[in-house]
Image (tube, rainbow, N blue to C red; front, side):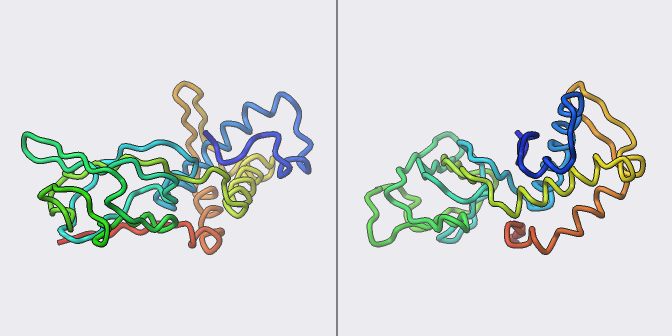
Amino acid sequence: MGLILNNSAFFYKMNLQSADLSYIDALIEVATAQIEKYCNRIFAAATYAETLHGTGQNQIFIRNPPINTLTSVQFVADTTTTVTTSGNFVYKINEGEIRWDTNNVTSTSEYVGSFRAGYNNIIVNYDGGFTIIPDVIKYVCAEMVGQMFSPEESQEAVSAVRLGNYSVKYKDKVTKTLFAYKSMLSMYRLHSVVLP
């Protein structure tokens, strides 16, 4: 799903014809994919069962903040899975950080207090993402679509379009457009942390 709709106020100035709407929808998907790739996240709210690497620390970070609801955390061992309810954790909504609530632990799990280091050994079930996409994200998406759609720009920007399973191949113009807005996107960009 795109970050904006083709009937958004952003497109009123473009005098779109009904025949243009499916093309605009495809461009919205391209712009959305590029923004989400650059920001390392999915913006739209959804339910996630996210598999993470244990850090050996008291905190982990989910991939699609903000956290709207934390349902459970599962600790996966070789042959067993231990499910711990959300009441044992505290989290920072916007940062996507989850910590053990050391003042209110009701679990008797051997995992209490840390997210044991390991590969794909933690599964976090949560509702995350934005229920209302931030205006700055919608603005950047609309600007990218406008630049790709513009007759002057489109000859330079889009080099191929395929509708089956959506694919749009574009030249450096679109990438340059995205990076022109990177300062606006920076507060929503998540950075990966590589642990030893």
